[in-house]
Image (tube, rainbow, N blue to C red; front, side, top):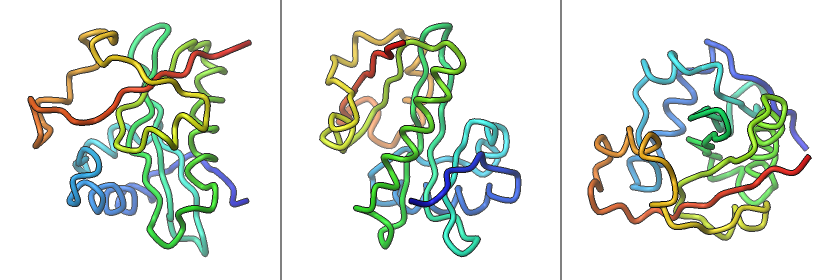
Length: 153
């Protein structure tokens, strides 16, 4: 198991490259470098030989709701439990903040279901979470799946 760490400013460029690699393939929403800098406190990273090989962010949406965003793992590091480690870090941070529900939009629902998330209708989520959708190249024909994790004490 590799260590999950909070991202720092020096990680922003690597996060940007990793996320946008998958965004260019249509697998996630792209992120600008300025957006990553502005939200660097939301990100977790995993490094190998001092190089960022995975990232994820926890974005607080409301008093009882947060989203896992930008979960990305380099192709060479996939299928090793790294993505699950990052999701666990996000869920632990949500618990620590007192957030009871964490959701995600994804093309990989089976991955999140293994981690305790349940499929939901996107329309069950508050309008506030749709703010980034207009920037998506697939808008308004979203084909991502929404999942939700209800936190236990």
